[in-house]
Image (cartoon, rainbow, N blue to C red; front, side, top):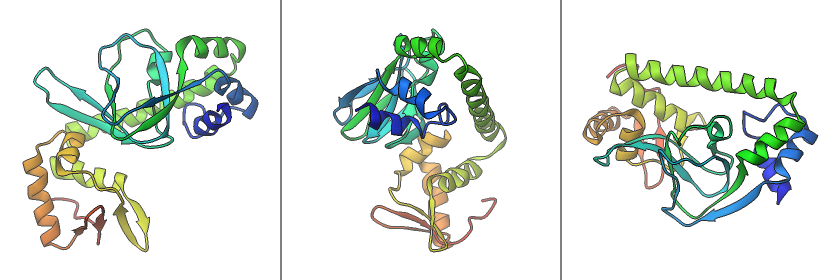
Length: 221
């Protein structure tokens, strides 16, 4: 079990530069936990303090308000992770996480992490550098929301979700228009209008489970 968690931790930017022995020591006390589809793994505002890494399944990370409106921060499958801030600082959860299918996670509690950090103090600098990179990514996202219109945010997100295959960019598991709208802070109606124009212009092709970017998306709409 610890070997499976070790392999998963190796893909986490926060820990990727640590030595094998150091990372094995972190994985050793970790536990696993399974969640049914549509299980609320973490609730925004809760006072919990554990780090999760997805071993199998898919999760959605989101923010919501009292009216039920949501902004999706991201979706992730095996190798994705969440809750890293909870093992570093004493603050309520900043976002909610829900399982989109049956999901299994490796779990590291704050007590486990602090004990490991006391025994491996040299890891602090490596983790600080990884956190600095994350802050830069968050700054870029904030810049997009402040300076880019809906189309440019959607264009960027489509490319982020896609993978190159035979000269085309393909999203294997296409999100719904509502999910895309939540990701970029827009309405489903606006995303639908943009999609209609992109399909009409033969920029994208939508199949049952895939979204295929046939040619470079225009820089403006």
